[in-house]
Length: 86
Image (cartoon, rainbow, N blue to C red; front, side, top):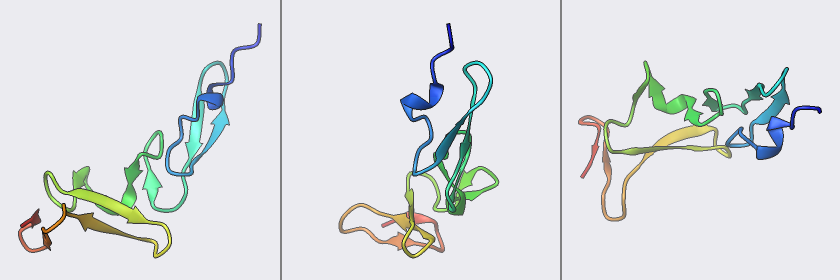
């Protein structure tokens, strides 16, 4: 029979749209600010595949202001110079 539609499983994250390809293949078309096979990478956050916020710091993207930011846990702030939460 017809191969199942791979896009039903919603493989594209962060608002990306799924385009069905031959067989069980698909391609994600990412919204601005996201990239990667499944739109899981935040373009703003990547600098040569490294997290621009530094290790163990969460990088997020705000679609309203169209900018990324480095997110620290409560009571911590991001030290941009040293790329860490403190």
